Length: 302
Ligand code: NDP
Image 1 (tube, rainbow, N blue to C red):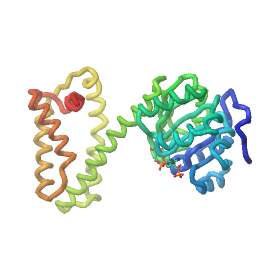
Image 2: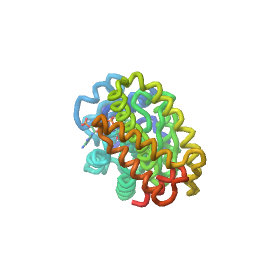
Image 3: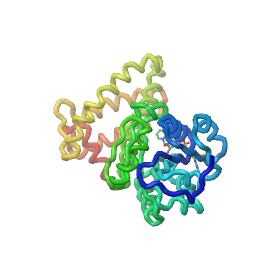
């Protein structure tokens, strides 16, 4: 089945959806739409990736323009906004998008989301930005988490289609950069934690401890973090950093132990040295009795 961009643009909640981009995540999204019974059209820059979605019941368009013409709602999920722009901002695709809704689930920065929203407004494209917070196997299941920002009305209108992705959908507000900003802040937590885990494994191995031996205890460390996030969030917002029972000076001592042991084994300490430097600057400014979260203020000094 093929479609052209002269097809009428559905005005109510569309039963049809197009997915542009068929990497692992794009294929997962397309599969969820198909499984939910939606008329799903797919396209990918490199041919061949549509085979699996087509086998599941999606229609593979020959061109991006044809894929856009098939649905009122277009979900874009490619590597980043350079990739998204390379698809969306080129003619005849840009013209085909006029009057349609684009939900961009590609990851990038808030600034790029704002730039794309401005482009969309100039070209008569209805634009919603989004961020997928969970891996591909969660898509179409209750475990999926997707964040959105942009016009509330457009979000409400698009929900019947987006609900096919399963899980939790949250509209964070009309400011278009908010989904990407949440995404980056949360990935900040994730990647620094992953850097910590990778380093911890290297340190443990140097001490004759396998990663498998360490993992259960690492999970215990991870499990204490949610309460710490909860407990320090209000203080960080209020600009108070109480350190009773756990002053930042104890963090300095603890990090020093890790640095010295790592260096004795010849293990790189770049990440820890950076953290230690932030902590020591807080102490140097006379805030040694405060809690660790005062680092928030230190790093924001630039
Ligand atoms: P990738 O991030 O590797 O993206 C692959 C897709 O981007 C392919 O469709 C690829 O097309 C396309 N692409 C890359 N460059 C271009 C270009 N210049 N022009 C056109 N298309 C291009 O894989 P994923 O599918 O995993 O991720 C897609 C998005 O989803 C990313 O932003 C990612 O951060 C986000 N995400 C992914 C998660 C995951 O678990 N995979 C989890 C949460 C978010 P081609 O095949 O032609 O190269």
